[in-house]
Length: 252
Image 1 (tube, one colour):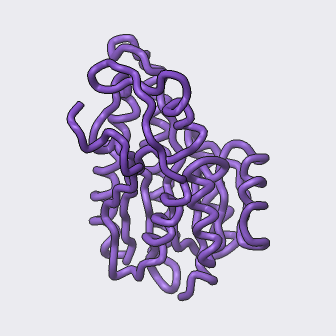
Image 2: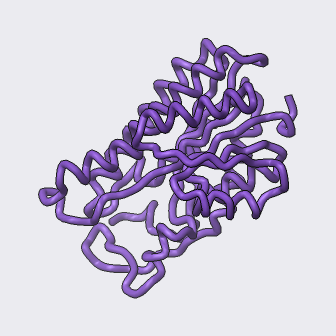
Protein backbone atom coordinates (compact mmCIF):
# COMPACT_ATOMS: atom_id res chain seq x y z
CA UNK A 1 0.00 0.00 0.00
CA UNK A 2 1.38 3.42 -0.95
CA UNK A 3 1.65 6.26 1.56
CA UNK A 4 -1.10 8.05 -0.41
CA UNK A 5 -3.63 5.54 0.99
CA UNK A 6 -2.22 5.31 4.51
CA UNK A 7 -3.68 6.78 7.70
CA UNK A 8 -1.56 8.16 10.55
CA UNK A 9 -2.52 9.46 14.00
CA UNK A 10 -0.29 12.05 15.69
CA UNK A 11 -0.97 13.09 19.29
CA UNK A 12 0.12 16.53 20.40
CA UNK A 13 -0.12 17.66 16.78
CA UNK A 14 -0.86 21.31 17.49
CA UNK A 15 2.67 22.49 18.22
CA UNK A 16 6.35 21.63 18.16
CA UNK A 17 7.48 18.13 17.29
CA UNK A 18 3.90 16.94 16.78
CA UNK A 19 3.28 19.64 14.21
CA UNK A 20 6.60 18.98 12.45
CA UNK A 21 5.91 15.23 12.28
CA UNK A 22 2.36 15.78 11.06
CA UNK A 23 3.52 18.03 8.24
CA UNK A 24 6.31 15.63 7.24
CA UNK A 25 3.84 12.73 7.13
CA UNK A 26 1.30 14.74 5.12
CA UNK A 27 3.98 15.86 2.70
CA UNK A 28 4.96 12.23 2.04
CA UNK A 29 1.36 11.30 1.27
CA UNK A 30 -0.17 10.16 4.56
CA UNK A 31 -3.58 11.33 5.66
CA UNK A 32 -2.97 12.47 9.24
CA UNK A 33 -5.42 12.59 12.12
CA UNK A 34 -4.25 15.61 14.11
CA UNK A 35 -4.91 15.10 17.82
CA UNK A 36 -4.64 17.57 20.68
CA UNK A 37 -6.55 19.51 23.30
CA UNK A 38 -6.65 22.86 21.46
CA UNK A 39 -8.69 22.81 18.25
CA UNK A 40 -7.35 26.17 17.08
CA UNK A 41 -3.76 24.87 17.11
CA UNK A 42 -4.79 21.69 15.28
CA UNK A 43 -6.50 23.76 12.59
CA UNK A 44 -3.33 25.82 12.23
CA UNK A 45 -1.31 22.66 11.66
CA UNK A 46 -3.86 21.46 9.12
CA UNK A 47 -3.63 24.72 7.16
CA UNK A 48 0.14 24.37 6.90
CA UNK A 49 -0.19 20.98 5.19
CA UNK A 50 -1.66 19.87 1.86
CA UNK A 51 -5.42 20.33 1.51
CA UNK A 52 -7.52 17.29 2.25
CA UNK A 53 -4.73 15.34 3.97
CA UNK A 54 -5.75 15.81 7.61
CA UNK A 55 -8.57 15.47 10.12
CA UNK A 56 -8.58 17.42 13.39
CA UNK A 57 -9.80 15.55 16.47
CA UNK A 58 -9.81 17.12 19.93
CA UNK A 59 -8.83 14.62 22.63
CA UNK A 60 -7.29 14.53 26.10
CA UNK A 61 -4.57 11.93 26.64
CA UNK A 62 -5.33 11.81 30.38
CA UNK A 63 -8.94 10.63 29.83
CA UNK A 64 -9.49 7.01 28.73
CA UNK A 65 -12.95 7.77 27.31
CA UNK A 66 -11.51 10.58 25.19
CA UNK A 67 -8.81 8.27 23.83
CA UNK A 68 -11.39 5.57 23.05
CA UNK A 69 -13.57 8.11 21.20
CA UNK A 70 -10.52 9.19 19.15
CA UNK A 71 -9.83 5.69 17.86
CA UNK A 72 -13.54 5.04 17.27
CA UNK A 73 -13.50 8.15 15.09
CA UNK A 74 -10.44 6.93 13.18
CA UNK A 75 -12.00 3.52 12.56
CA UNK A 76 -15.41 4.86 11.53
CA UNK A 77 -13.88 7.49 9.22
CA UNK A 78 -11.09 5.53 7.54
CA UNK A 79 -11.60 1.89 8.45
CA UNK A 80 -7.90 1.38 9.15
CA UNK A 81 -4.79 2.79 10.88
CA UNK A 82 -1.26 2.46 9.54
CA UNK A 83 0.86 4.67 11.83
CA UNK A 84 0.48 6.00 15.37
CA UNK A 85 2.94 8.59 16.69
CA UNK A 86 2.60 8.77 20.49
CA UNK A 87 4.00 12.26 20.89
CA UNK A 88 1.91 14.21 23.41
CA UNK A 89 3.75 14.84 26.66
CA UNK A 90 4.35 17.18 29.56
CA UNK A 91 6.77 17.84 32.39
CA UNK A 92 6.43 18.76 36.06
CA UNK A 93 7.74 21.97 37.63
CA UNK A 94 11.54 21.82 38.20
CA UNK A 95 11.48 21.51 41.98
CA UNK A 96 13.69 19.60 44.38
CA UNK A 97 13.00 15.86 44.15
CA UNK A 98 11.59 15.65 47.65
CA UNK A 99 9.20 18.55 46.99
CA UNK A 100 7.51 17.03 43.93
CA UNK A 101 3.89 16.38 44.87
CA UNK A 102 2.08 13.14 44.18
CA UNK A 103 -0.43 15.07 42.07
CA UNK A 104 2.38 16.51 39.90
CA UNK A 105 3.94 13.07 39.52
CA UNK A 106 0.65 11.44 38.56
CA UNK A 107 -0.20 14.15 36.02
CA UNK A 108 3.04 13.45 34.13
CA UNK A 109 2.63 9.67 34.37
CA UNK A 110 -0.97 9.87 33.11
CA UNK A 111 0.00 11.97 30.09
CA UNK A 112 3.40 10.55 29.16
CA UNK A 113 2.96 6.85 29.95
CA UNK A 114 -0.64 5.81 30.53
CA UNK A 115 -1.84 7.81 27.52
CA UNK A 116 0.58 6.14 25.08
CA UNK A 117 -0.22 2.73 26.64
CA UNK A 118 -3.94 3.19 25.99
CA UNK A 119 -3.36 4.61 22.49
CA UNK A 120 -1.14 1.63 21.68
CA UNK A 121 -3.80 -0.81 22.87
CA UNK A 122 -6.42 0.81 20.64
CA UNK A 123 -4.01 0.84 17.71
CA UNK A 124 -3.29 -2.87 18.20
CA UNK A 125 -7.00 -3.68 18.07
CA UNK A 126 -7.43 -1.86 14.76
CA UNK A 127 -4.16 -2.94 13.12
CA UNK A 128 -4.42 -6.66 13.85
CA UNK A 129 -7.86 -6.99 12.24
CA UNK A 130 -7.44 -4.83 9.13
CA UNK A 131 -6.46 -5.80 5.59
CA UNK A 132 -3.59 -5.50 4.84
CA UNK A 133 -2.85 -6.48 8.42
CA UNK A 134 -0.43 -4.67 10.71
CA UNK A 135 0.95 -1.18 11.14
CA UNK A 136 3.59 0.89 12.89
CA UNK A 137 3.69 2.69 16.23
CA UNK A 138 6.35 5.31 17.00
CA UNK A 139 6.89 6.60 20.54
CA UNK A 140 8.48 9.91 21.49
CA UNK A 141 11.05 8.84 24.03
CA UNK A 142 13.18 12.00 24.33
CA UNK A 143 16.85 12.22 25.28
CA UNK A 144 15.48 11.81 28.81
CA UNK A 145 14.94 8.13 27.99
CA UNK A 146 18.74 7.89 28.39
CA UNK A 147 19.80 10.58 30.87
CA UNK A 148 18.00 13.03 33.16
CA UNK A 149 18.22 16.75 33.55
CA UNK A 150 18.25 18.14 37.10
CA UNK A 151 14.84 18.21 38.81
CA UNK A 152 13.11 16.04 36.19
CA UNK A 153 12.27 12.83 38.07
CA UNK A 154 8.71 12.50 36.78
CA UNK A 155 9.46 13.28 33.14
CA UNK A 156 12.63 11.16 33.06
CA UNK A 157 10.93 8.20 34.74
CA UNK A 158 8.13 8.20 32.17
CA UNK A 159 10.54 8.43 29.25
CA UNK A 160 12.61 5.52 30.57
CA UNK A 161 9.33 3.64 30.90
CA UNK A 162 8.43 4.49 27.30
CA UNK A 163 11.51 2.51 26.25
CA UNK A 164 10.10 -0.51 28.06
CA UNK A 165 6.70 0.03 26.46
CA UNK A 166 8.35 0.30 23.04
CA UNK A 167 10.25 -2.96 23.40
CA UNK A 168 7.41 -4.92 25.01
CA UNK A 169 4.78 -3.82 22.51
CA UNK A 170 7.18 -4.40 19.61
CA UNK A 171 7.62 -7.98 20.82
CA UNK A 172 3.89 -8.51 21.40
CA UNK A 173 3.06 -6.92 18.06
CA UNK A 174 5.11 -9.37 16.02
CA UNK A 175 2.25 -11.84 15.71
CA UNK A 176 0.10 -9.12 14.16
CA UNK A 177 2.76 -7.54 11.88
CA UNK A 178 2.86 -4.48 14.11
CA UNK A 179 6.28 -2.81 14.38
CA UNK A 180 6.98 -0.44 17.29
CA UNK A 181 9.91 1.98 17.48
CA UNK A 182 11.05 5.02 19.40
CA UNK A 183 12.55 8.39 18.45
CA UNK A 184 14.60 10.10 21.15
CA UNK A 185 14.74 13.85 20.58
CA UNK A 186 17.25 16.31 21.93
CA UNK A 187 16.81 20.11 21.80
CA UNK A 188 14.40 20.54 18.92
CA UNK A 189 13.45 24.20 18.47
CA UNK A 190 9.89 24.28 19.81
CA UNK A 191 7.99 26.47 22.29
CA UNK A 192 8.82 23.88 24.98
CA UNK A 193 12.57 24.48 24.54
CA UNK A 194 12.54 28.27 24.13
CA UNK A 195 13.90 28.54 27.67
CA UNK A 196 17.12 26.86 26.49
CA UNK A 197 18.11 29.95 24.49
CA UNK A 198 16.55 32.66 26.68
CA UNK A 199 18.34 34.49 29.46
CA UNK A 200 20.67 32.24 31.49
CA UNK A 201 19.40 29.09 29.73
CA UNK A 202 18.84 25.81 31.54
CA UNK A 203 20.50 24.11 34.50
CA UNK A 204 23.32 21.65 33.83
CA UNK A 205 24.30 18.61 35.88
CA UNK A 206 26.87 20.65 37.84
CA UNK A 207 24.26 23.24 38.81
CA UNK A 208 25.45 25.91 36.38
CA UNK A 209 23.07 27.62 33.98
CA UNK A 210 23.86 27.56 30.27
CA UNK A 211 22.15 28.26 26.96
CA UNK A 212 22.10 25.19 24.69
CA UNK A 213 22.10 24.79 20.90
CA UNK A 214 18.87 23.65 19.26
CA UNK A 215 17.96 22.14 15.90
CA UNK A 216 15.06 22.76 13.53
CA UNK A 217 12.09 20.59 14.51
CA UNK A 218 11.75 19.68 10.82
CA UNK A 219 14.71 17.30 11.29
CA UNK A 220 12.60 15.34 13.78
CA UNK A 221 9.56 15.38 11.54
CA UNK A 222 11.62 14.00 8.68
CA UNK A 223 12.98 11.24 10.95
CA UNK A 224 9.45 10.22 11.97
CA UNK A 225 8.36 10.21 8.31
CA UNK A 226 11.34 7.98 7.45
CA UNK A 227 10.43 5.51 10.19
CA UNK A 228 6.77 5.59 9.13
CA UNK A 229 7.62 4.90 5.51
CA UNK A 230 9.56 1.69 6.10
CA UNK A 231 8.04 -1.62 4.99
CA UNK A 232 6.72 -3.63 7.94
CA UNK A 233 9.51 -6.20 7.64
CA UNK A 234 11.94 -3.45 8.75
CA UNK A 235 11.89 -1.41 11.95
CA UNK A 236 13.86 1.38 13.59
CA UNK A 237 13.70 0.25 17.22
CA UNK A 238 15.38 3.40 18.53
CA UNK A 239 16.67 6.52 16.83
CA UNK A 240 18.31 9.53 18.49
CA UNK A 241 17.86 12.86 16.70
CA UNK A 242 19.62 15.67 18.52
CA UNK A 243 21.17 19.07 18.13
CA UNK A 244 24.76 18.26 17.13
CA UNK A 245 26.36 20.57 19.69
CA UNK A 246 24.09 20.02 22.67
CA UNK A 247 25.91 18.83 25.83
CA UNK A 248 24.42 15.34 25.87
CA UNK A 249 27.38 13.12 25.03
CA UNK A 250 29.84 14.99 27.26
CA UNK A 251 30.41 14.56 30.97
CA UNK A 252 28.11 16.48 33.30
